[in-house]
Image 1 (spheres, rainbow over the protein chains, first blue to last red):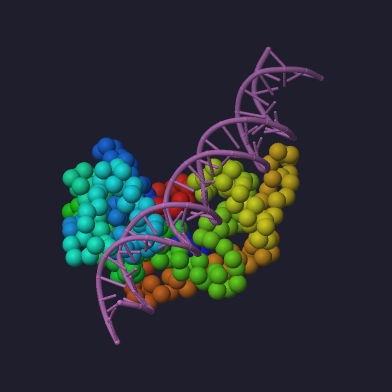
Image 2: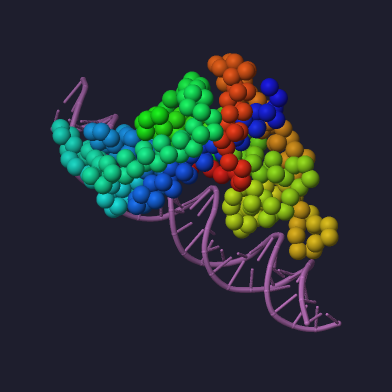
Amino acid sequence: MENSEAMALTAVLLAAAGDLTRRINDGVEARGFDGRPAYGFAFTRLAPDGATVTDLATHLGMTKQAASQLVDELVRKGYAERRPYPGDARARLVVLTERGWACTRAAEEAAADAVRAWVEVLGEDEVRVLRDRLARIAPYGPIRPAW
Amino acid sequence: MENSEAMALTAVLLAAAGDLTRRINDGVEARGFDGRPAYGFAFTRLAPDGATVTDLATHLGMTKQAASQLVDELVRKGYAERRPYPGDARARLVVLTERGWACTRAAEEAAADAVRAWVEVLGEDEVRVLRDRLARIAPYGPIRPAW
DNA sequence: GGCAAGTGGTCAAGTTGCTTGACTATATGG
DNA sequence: CCATATAGTCAAGCAACTTGACCACTTGCC
């Protein structure tokens, strides 16, 4: 495969990923929630039983200070709350509020809508194959912005 | 397709895109260049004949002020230079220097290396199919960070 | 030719979402 | 019970943008 093809693959991957996240974010906002893409990935870690700030930081690939600031934001907007962590007085358990759950469901709906647009172009089977192949090359580890 | 599958597709797409851009950036730095991912996308617009700041801003989906600052950076690091634009004394033509071309080639090599790692997992044909399918769903328009 | 309106670019200041560094409170293992 | 490690926060700094103001030049129009 030529070098220029590799760059083309990169460009199209980024375009697709950016398009999808933007569609999801738009869909979430259209459903009456105020957020940014990072929220969704935080929510997937907070559900279903909550998580500590440090857990969240690891999951999102950022410092615990940044994760703590993100939690501040989520709390201020009513999506999450800090509760004592049973058995360790240093730690706090960050859990979703009812509004946080509603926002999570909205994000999943918006994601399904966005993917539906792709299914209309490629068909259900091809999208599934796409996902499976990407899963085989995607690294484990923290969820991070593409750049 | 279920809602949770849609979220899984999003996560894996972002992971793959992030992985690829990180590999390319690492490869470029390993070849002795100091940059960030946005450079690569700027370079693809500056090559082969140069571009104005406003062109670059449109291509990258940012304000012309931000694009101007990016060009400042590229000039300071020796990758590009501003030259007069023939036929319009307001505009300037931003062109790659020899070092800028070398960095572009390094980025293409690094991209090819990164994709080669994927080819080893999926095989050449599947990667090509992946690219073609992504090309069918990716929007045209500016290249933007995924989030 | 001259003048209003549009376009290309830059300067300056403000914002956002992170980082590093310093610190407190609690836990844990000899 | 004290040294060391861990959870979390506070504060300051920084990178990569944004918005707003502005100048230089071009263009369309009378």
